[in-house]
Image 1 (tube, rainbow, N blue to C red):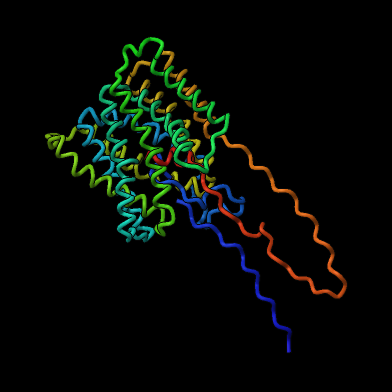
Image 2 (cartoon, helix red, strand yellow; image 1 turned 180 degrees about the horizontal axis):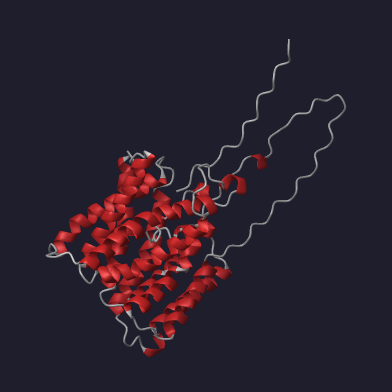
Length: 383
């Protein structure tokens, strides 16, 4: 009779599939399983996409960078609330189609739907509408630069709202540098002359909504059991419903559908709010949130270039200089100290002769997923 076989070793459980994002989010933040885990744990279980991640990274940067130009063109033919409603409607259609292809189910919990309603307001309906209203009076280049302040607001809020996200001297310095860049963009030494303060304030408030909404999402929607795609699609659906209720109260039905503004709104939704979410989530899954969030730094550059080249917007010296200072500050606020490697374990004593050797699982055998950084969702929320 043959000796019984030892049971096969059970491999460590792989983390659940990560979700972009606003944009990014949204745009919901990537789950904690997408945080900095060992390289082997971050490898996607699905087949590798046909396009290299660098190509998709560039495409995402262009899509979100051109979003501010599309908003500007859209407001030339439609009211701001109508631009936001069309954007959310087109983006929802793309995500619903993706959910149908992947056979995703909508959340079933009424509590989850309640939290998603608040998230839709903070991450979609409100900031999208604020940007649309802002671009009635400010250039798209300035709107894109204001959007780049989201990591600064996020860092300031995380100090207060996220106890595990401790500030460091470098990150606090980055916060100060970033807001110095904002003052440079706005021309504070000139008394903000020639600047439309209400429009600029709405653009900055829209950027502030993103980290507020993400902190809310992180605290209320973690561990719901639904996939991120299902949560994001549901969130956009609720945002569309919100705008469907609000828009008729403040605007009248359009009497015409001009071609260029209509195409701009459809592209803004289908690409900037639909396809961009799928691209961002794929990047988070493949290269991790730290690399994927770098798209944030390209958005204002592309938005500025598009506004100047295609819309003929004027650009004074303080705008690009201030934008560069803002990006440096944002990069500093997202820097993190490298974790100290644990001390090497002491070598185990050699087993005594004729003593059976047993294997006890060490703490290193279990891969603990670290919480994802708050800034990882910064660009997701721009969806």
